[in-house]
Image (cartoon, rainbow over all chains, first blue to last red; front, top):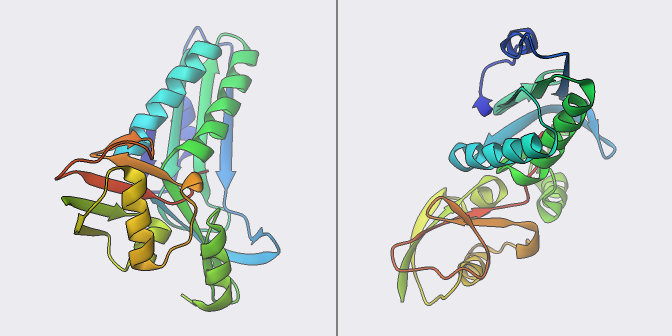
Length: 148
Length: 80
């Protein structure tokens, strides 16, 4: 199950939700805000999402992962709003009887959500400019002349 | 002519200067709507990098739009 939040992600609390006596392993991925991208010093990130469709697409990704790599439980939480360097932007956790399904399902979920969910990321740079990640023209435009 | 409500997100919203607008357009498909908005707001992003939804359901660019539909234009995504 995928959810979106404007609050700080608490990995320990999420991990506890996955506990199951039948689970022999658990795998998690945390995506953190880093201070550099493509040679530019990044000060903070801003995430925007269209939650109604993100949830629906997230459900599809989880169903695909479960079909391919049968697991017991999986959760994903994605941040929206303004994030600082080091903040956890996304957390994915999977519990399964054996480790292989947990590793593979976790990888599948994070890889798919990055390219399929209606979520956008705006980088704010040290030089005062900003740019939407993966929006080529916009990133160029932003770096060239629209300080924010 | 069809009355179409267009919703913009992220970069598209910044280009358009509005989050949503209702337009009267001579269009057949979602791709036609996208082209109209690109001309209107001077955006150059290729449709192939973007996604579209009609009335809150993901759609293909070739999907037919009807009078009264809401078309959601999603620029290239970057979750995670």
